[in-house]
Amino acid sequence: MSETITKKDVIWILEDIGKLLELTEETPFKSRAYYNAARNIAATEEDIETLVREGNLSSIKGIGDALNQKITEFVTTGTLKYYEELKSSIPPGHIEMLKIQGLGPKKIRALYGKLKIKTIGELEYACIENRLVELTGFGKKTQDKILAGIERLKRYKKRHLFADIIGEAENLLDSVRKQKDVILASLAGSIRRRNEVIKDIDILASSETPLKLADFFVSLPEVQDVTAKGETKVSVVLKSGINADLRIVAEKEFPYALHHFTGSKEHNITMRKRAKEMGIKMNEYGLYKGDDIIPCESESEIFSALGLSFIPPELRENMGEIEAAERGEMPKLVERKDIRGLLHIHTNASDGSDSLEAIVKAAKTMGMEYIGIAEHSQSAYYAGGLSVNEIKKQHAAIDEINKRENKFHLFKGIEADILLDGRLDYDDDVLSSFDFVIAAVHSHFGMSEDEMNTRLIKALDNRFTTILAHPTGRLLLARDPYSLDLEKIIDFAAKKRKIIELNANPHRLDLDWRYCKYAKSQGVKIAINPDAHNILGLYHIDFGINIARKGWLEPSDCINCLSLEEMKYFLSTL
Image (cartoon, rainbow, N blue to C red):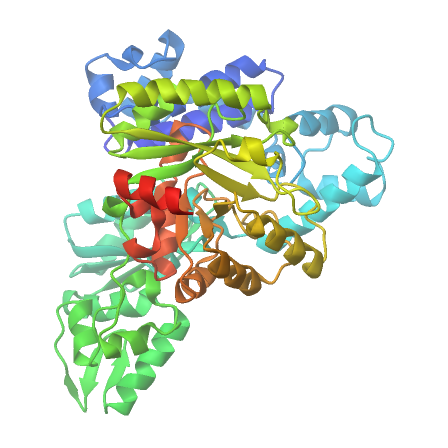
């Protein structure tokens, strides 16, 4: 068995194969089979290595002989010949083009078939030359959107979503920790602070044989190129294109270096300023009183030496955390164990891919006490939005499940589109049939700030609105927030006792953590919602928790930390 292949790795490679197949002429059923297999593996509690070793992979729904052989090959050898051949058969530029908003596999294939476009550079040139205007299925409007998407891609280049990078970072860290000469090791930098967007992977390790560790690091199979190598720092480019730095220190230097290389820069500057005012010199090697080092065996002891309570890594952004630590008023940040239920879940009744029953089973496996189903509303026809009759049918199905469940409950919800004039997408009779209503903007993003403020405030003023979904409409590294005065919206939500969503989808993570703290200060409750469209999406809650923690949120700030009975009462009082 390969020592490095995990369940996450298997899910990742199956999803990547599905994506690559969409860029070929294969039928959509083939790519869907890989997506389904990834989702079903994510839902199982079985250890993937055990399933392979005991020959039980086929016990997972959707995994036949062909997939069984491929997964077994990947888990046992660490590579998959089919994946490598498939990847090499597709121009690398086509894979990158998938990141351009509005450019899906079908259009990419058309561009290649008609204009032989292989790279984003060729695509940009073709747009500048107006070659897409007369192309069937494109036109001037689509061409302009593609050009804007290319410009956005350039702006965000070399930046990665936390969700896309954390698996590889943790695998690298595990490899470093297993090296026999390593004493201590940790992730550092923005990835340890759980930022939503990451530039590179930072790892810190202590060792008495730094050159041996450096040699080991550059020899890892994930490494593509070595850009620097010394006793204190190794810089590499991984095969995935991500930059990674390993910093090596002595064991006694590790706590000081961990604080320093975790950052942020602004936090470190303020900490050094505080130390200087106390007559202490602070750097990555230690705390010094004159020529004498102040011995610290952990980050906690460093903070204590400077008269501060421990500051969690997520909060080290110089946004008042040092002052709060001085007063002994650090928040008790929300954790995964505090989450009792999940709201904002889509099933295959709208644009989700799993059944109501499958979602219930998965949520119970996660230890949840309740979930809230919230399909798209009727205006979202492109996402299978529910008609009034379909709502009644789903409510009947939910009632049936609730009748047979003793310790688990489904709440009836809807993700109702906020229409152009601020009205919600059903009349009051329909809205009154739900336990909660999530109001969401899904169209007309180009409104002025005043127009968008008016639209959102009217939606929040609706007596049936419970939660405002993904309040700025941003897609990280893909779409900027629409224009609005978010503090004004939060203030109005506070006045009307409305909840604001922290959308945990790693492409959104919206509410931004900087505004979570403001919402908390105004007494606005937050719903950390996975916005799940499949079973795997339920686990996006972890990314939302990261942002909630960065936003200073405690369990009392988050409605889905309420128990089932508390949630029933809470929703009945709104």
